[in-house]
Image (cartoon, rainbow, N blue to C red; front, top):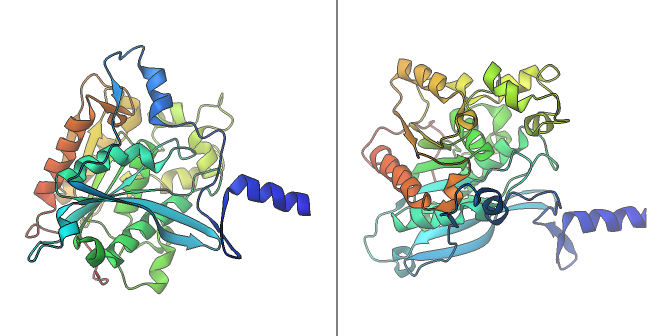
Length: 345
């Protein structure tokens, strides 16, 4: 029993706070989705690239390791990047729109710092930006990650005044698996299955825009299943997240597809895609559904790029520009906002 306890503590990387154990990070030696490792895989084909800098300029304030939700002793954290004018607390400064970034990594790996350069870029454009950690598939299967993302939205809205955020102008963004997670979290407003906190909170987890960066929109299409349900992978990344292959967990594969939730209240969506079409499969079909409801949408392709392009220069700045331009248009204070009647505070 004592040996089992020691192994558990070593695996989870426990942070001791007095006599209370708070787990803020799950250590997984197989979690190798970092910008630096991805760079080594790509530099041969793209010798001109560089890992985007995480250096924080004077115009941006970095606030790290804020706990946004706890499950028992497990604490999930985020980092905030705030335009520096909030530091000075200038009289009459208007609340800023916000964007929350969900990292990728096949639902089983990745780190929130992968989106730090993007978050800094958005803060430089006048947005409060958050990068979040969430429970990966080795720790908790679908739909735990969706619960976490909605909890992060609710936390940011609850603390909007403290960080200069306009609670009626919050966007969700993510890359790769994070793009699919962000999209699913964004299009499932009001569905308790994806938001168990809603039962005990008056604060909304709805968002007013979605940025899907090279993430899937439909797990059930034949083209997607060719990659994500490959029988040679045991299990595939998606299969590990869902707890089984498509034939075994068909309802989950369907249920996790953002395309199936398009309705008149769907927020505006930007699809930011690479030159590798398999990673953004389903977005065209989803757009056709959005057109029926008049939902604003845009597709921006970054040409001649690999998947994970947002981690690197020279592609980061064009990506930041595309996202900021889209949100500047659709998150204006006087624009049509999509939210439920639950309280924004």
